[in-house]
Image 1 (spheres, rainbow, N blue to C red):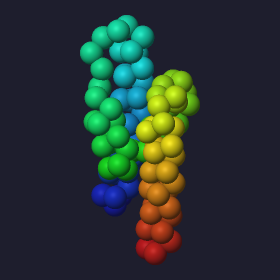
Image 2: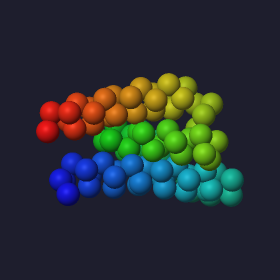
Image 3: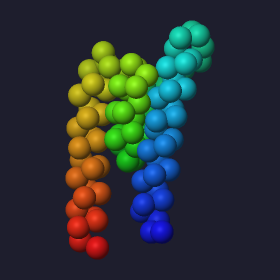
Length: 88
């Protein structure tokens, strides 16, 4: 399996898990994952499943940075993946 596919799967699973973890911590008023960290994970390729996590956990959906930025990053990453697959 190509490393790009392994990386894509891993970063997206991490992003989804962090979204759920941060929501759980928010409910308990516990230590939170910094927004900068969450956005960095999205920028590194985890945006598609983070976006899914936002909808599944109802998390960060009112924050403009996330409600606008994450779908844009997700579209870019999905587009890049499609181009990468098409040119192989």
